[in-house]
Amino acid sequence: MKTCREMAERWSVTERTVTAFCKSGRIPGAVKNGKSWQIPDDAEKPADGRVLSGKYRKKTAPGRKKSLPIGISDYVRAQSEYYYVDKTLLIREFLDQKPLVSLFTRPRRFGKTLNMDMLRVFFEISEEDTGRYFKDKAIWRCGETYRAHQGKYPVVFLTFKDVKFDSWEATLDKIRGLLQEEYGRHQELMDSDRIAGYEKEYFGRILKGTANEVELTCALEKLSKMLASHYSKAPVIIIDEYDTPIHEGYSKEFYDEIIGFMRNFFSGAFKDNKNLSYGFLTGIFRIAQESIFSGLNNLSVNSVMDEAYDRYFGFTEAEVQELLEYYGAAEKEAELKDWYDGYLFGREEIYNPWSVINYLSKGCVPQAYWVNTGKNEILEEVLRTATDDITERLFALLQGERVIARIDQNVVYRSLLDDPANIYSLLLVAGYLKTPKKELQADGSYLCEVSIPNREIAAVYKSEILSHLLQIGAITRTTADQIAESLYANDLEKLQNAIAEYMEKTVSFYDAGAEGFYHGLVLGLIALMDNQYKIRSNRESGDGRYDISLIPREQRYPGIIMELKWRSRLNADDLEALAEDALAQIDDRRYGAEMEEEGLRKILKLGIAFSGKRVSIKQRSSRGASGRI
Image (cartoon, rainbow, N blue to C red; front, side, top):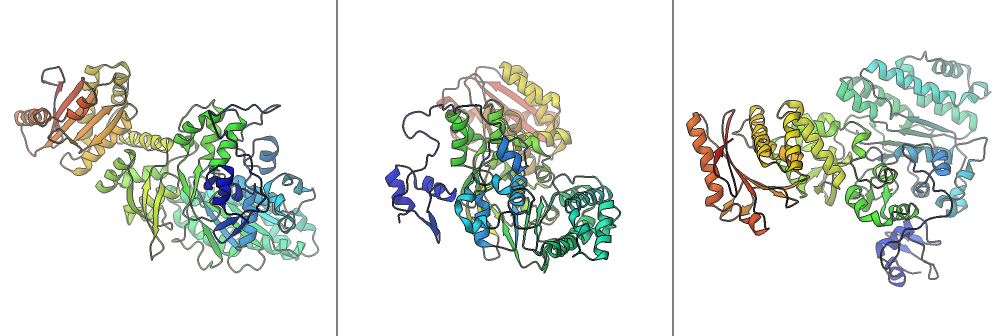
């Protein structure tokens, strides 16, 4: 047997590529020994979907290409009618470990529902031969040990992904309807001679939609008991997006009602339930603090921080390369990586699957596709509760820097009120941050370096910051449009006026004497102008440190330097004089030296003075005279 390193040298690929081959089941006979893979000596190198020398070449497969599975969460349909990225080895990994109840937490649109439906089809007893949907998949090649579980269990399947309502009453009605539909899938129980009369009466109330709230909390427990009695086999229970109604309860103010219901609902299904073979749940958060899983000591939690199952939600690098090769777009790999790669689940580098397939379907046009799949309540919460320190770190993140944060995977929305620093934990599990470096602490939390994963998420941050500034009135849409239009038209005078208006509006809504104003100002500039400028703050240039510098990404735009000063209780004349001092400081300390060294000749210099809610701005271009805006 050989190691991954030895085979990598033999095949002229990276050790990481060989490991990916092993994980995906593409090397027959490869086995995992501890944390290392052992590979048969005579193993042949799998095709990895890329050309090892020269430029990528487009490859046109014979026949019509399969459609991309946008929004398809039906496993049978996805694997037969669409391009399907094979995730069936999730079944092998699960059967090897055999946890009784598994919770998978991942961001939205990372394939959770499709994977859960895949588990349903694999395990569920059916009159048809559902094994045919797996015979060409990786799990089937793993041997009879795994195939023996196919089609052998009754299955209960519920997805809460669409339980999004404004009231507890409407939410409960939707849950009642979902249970009614799931009970309807098992109407064979009504004719079973193994089910007691009182159980059939209860079954009938669920089918008719007349069960009350208390009866509904017992629905999973009772259904699992009836299925176990009828089939002489305890069922598999699958709950997809279990926390969606909990998020709605938090934002729509019926939090206590939904938490109380879910606690009893899940307790009956998963806690000390002898009529359970296996349980699976998916969601974004692990809501342990709310005691939903109180006393559930058989729960195995698999989060974005864990190595187990790390490659089964989202696309791996090897899977993306094969996808690009299939659709003749291999030359787009660098752009795709820049926009949609960067997530780290465990130790696996992961691409956003929703964005990847939308990118390909839209002719390889890079956009923020993921942002349009749902509301970004988490970023809204961040901006509403952000302290000066958090705002400063948001600025650093948007500039591509890493910040240090403590990550506690058990936090929930309401914890923001107790400690705003929990924001980073929420952003991580929801898909807005990644952890390039992490260190486990004694209390179970992690001390991490966090950063923004990719260009798509950076665009989401900027759009939410701009929306927030518009919402609170810090700027108007007209001002934002003026800045964008002046940059597009290279109209320096219009740009000066637009920035002056932005400053005045911002001062009206923030305290210019507080540090939070300064950071809010910079965040707003990033949201408005980052496509055209690299925005820096408090950096050395010339003989000192400037406050804000906007370095153009293209030579056709002017460089912009801002020096900010603040004094309390100034009259109008003194405020103008302070602005002149700020403007003079830009020249006296040669703050433009950095831009001049980069060959910029057109530089807009702004001296900005604040006093309370008033602002005075003086400006000078690199070849112009001082003047008041």
